[in-house]
Length: 554
Image (cartoon, rainbow, N blue to C red):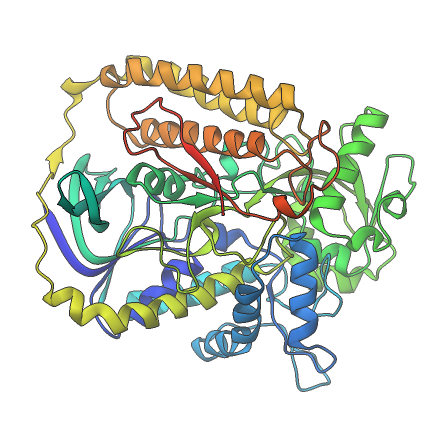
């Protein structure tokens, strides 16, 4: 079945929903999401949204904090764009019905502080900000007649048409144009063709490429993989942010202890009760995330301990249960009373600062293809994202992309383009066997352990080289055996996971310095001005499944 819309949005987090609501004013919108519509990274975001609304704050201060966090690789024009557009985007959320916490005795928001911020500027809805935002946006999207939501639909690949004009053997003009996507209906076991004038990738991050992550199971880097296979440029994939404080407990899968807890005075201590962050940075527990994560990693390796602890027991119990009800309840269910007990924590993969390379409106290097949110590399985060800038970025670029697309939509509708073949089909069990699912499970686990051990918080040249050798072998195995395995979401995700892991490794190998989230023991210092560039990776023109990508600097 061929589905035709003006806009195809892949992902139902804050980026996809915000864009869809704005784009629906100018055309029809399809939102495809591979699980339940609420199963997104946004829904799990605890801390809040950074924005200049406080009386003692300013755009210049927020810009300065963001640039310092990004360690030399932020694009200043993008930082300025996002910071200054923030207040209007917050007003829109409030008008939709998002209930940010307010100060009881003053006319204003209850603003929190997180690592790297010089002012209190984090708007929050207790410690469940993402859930509050997601709930309101989903309700608005479901009420809009121009928006259709397709749950349990996984994008397999983009439909990209290549146009060129030659004189002899010389290319005078060439252009790749995205025309839609091939989508697997997981429940119905069918492949459908979605045709659209504009395709938006809002697929979130790739935290599941690592063994330990704060991300939900859907964060498998799908958008990065399909954009790369289509020929789009990706950038800065070596910069993977590890959140310093995820709950350490055998049954506490993927549970984050928000940075806002440190913003309210929590201290990091070892199991002997000794605070240690003053050894690593003047800001101590509120230093930038890359510094705090490496400090915890160092303390654990030096002591041999399995975790460190976050202690906020000195604060009033009533305050803690009101400010952090979600964290309090979750910890209490595991026998940890945060009003009395330090919380055991470890770092975990949290956020991709790199992604699909875009301009200031979310445009990628492929015409009609846009990327927004964590899957995009806009230039805002540089080498290390400033806490709570991610939801802000998603809203600002959703608005910018919606404006840019609306201005061009009519011309796109009137443009003569080749038709898109309908590749819809039933997934046939005869085309593959489920008897080799053990291979998928084994390789999935192997990749995640490999990335955690060899391409984690602290890296070396030797470990990176070994990781690359292993991942190439896994891809060879997949190439050989994929035709014999029945098509499933697990197989598709594994293929994408292997590709994203390889790209992270290759980008990390290419950066011979330590900067922000990329720390290499063999190159422990920042390089000179020649390293103040984005790492850009793009598929070779003649690349097949195992060929080398092209790594450039831009």
